[in-house]
Length: 350
Ligand SMILES: *Cc1c(COP(=O)(O)O)cnc(C)c1O
Image (cartoon, rainbow, N blue to C red; front, side, top):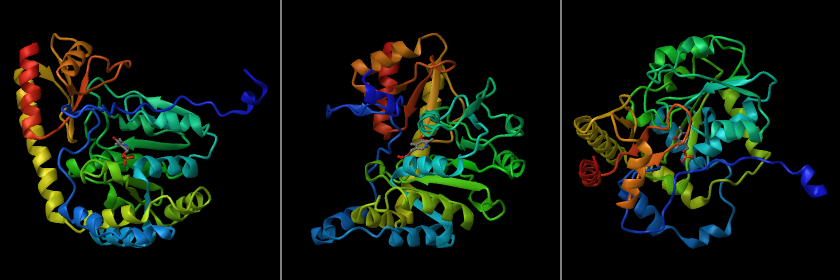
């Protein structure tokens, strides 16, 4: 190691799912929405004047925050927006997990949490899900420096009842509890109504999955006025202009097309239920997904072998070589046609 390297922050980065360059593939590996965003988004992009790019964007992303305020019936000072919920979550870790006690999250969960904890030097401990991949609320009834739980959880796809998560929040008045609802739109139960009851609850959401806008990078969070104001202070001490002016308008347009949003979320959920039945017939089992993916294992075939076979047939799913889950495949829900092609290939293989 050279002398200056002693002073370098060394981190093991998060590894996202592959984004293959080939065109004719079926991509079911990163939980993207198979449908395009609302036509209203298309309109915004076509009518956007490049002259706008001369100026800095609105650091408060007012148009987007106002549209979120309307859609979710929340006051503007209880809303935070960022460049995807990854940005919102990273800023939240930095802001709220600044104590000395370890933060807590499940052992099987979104694999970015430990990366941020290491990067920001936040001590952490994981709490093991039970054998059915369920969260045991009692695991979180102890001293801690903060809690983060996705609901529904990823990559398991399982939702925890809001009443149990509420108990966790209520029992932890001295730490911030973050509920990551990246897949909340496919679940139907949200912690959002509780943010006015608990000033230590932050609920994060994203446009990446349910709104087909992973490429635009829009995430947001709801919390008490106090939480949001601490979060904004940290954000403005880091980089004020994180969301560009076109993206702010794209987000607003998406929120204004409620009918399209509902229709596409429903389509994904219908295809999910169809896929569950087909996978069961083929000998797969899985937790009952409330997301836009299914976390499945086969009764005899090895997940890694199925993964390699599907890849050779240009169907990409996600495989995690990690303890407890190395015999599972995480399969994103595509269009009905894509899922039919997947089922046909699985039949051929098995
Ligand atoms: C996808 C995902 C995110 C991040 O989404 P963004 O694209 O950054 O908005 C956060 N948490 C979970 C659990 C996810 O699956």
